[in-house]
Image (tube, rainbow, N blue to C red):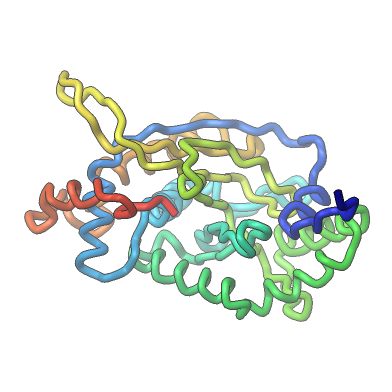
Length: 292
């Protein structure tokens, strides 16, 4: 039996270096949503645009709408004061190295983009990360891999403070201003999990972490009748310094409305005739509407 220690992944090293007892109060919430219309909408977009749109892209767009409607969430804290962001930016987490590492793909002005725009831009950003072509990300990896965790901890704190609280950009070090925006979204449904909660990442300094669960056929009551519908659960970890019940309610309401009638995002009153129930049936096939 070998006594050789297994190599620590970059993701695990970051987690260990940034871990500490929570210093901010957090709110945890979840929404279990009927995804019937969302699935039909996604299938319609896939057929009409050729883009691989998923539930996660729709959630990202909905969160962007919520941040626009509730600007007290779309900001950051600097020296004890709340300061709003100039734009609505959201980051999606991308798994690299077979899960051994994580990277973020930030999309700016999400509220001004369509769901297809979000899907296309995220695909391009994720592809660049997988190819090793993201220079800013690559520049941050060398010190993470080289430094021991006890030295990495103060480095993460310092760079997080500079970039995420003071908006400092240092391209030579791979640091950009407000690198995560105001919200981080990731899918656990792609791993077969129905739901989960994300722990806050101290150096990211964002008020909201949203996790998208797996799409499931589940029993539901519709018009007084028991039936089977496509459902999924969305969970959120929210920084209580930013968010009270009112703001959390806005986030929940906007996301729920986006699932009940996603067609309004295209300026349509409801599902068009060409997006028939066949779209919903098509999504019942394996792999038709993944949440990643």
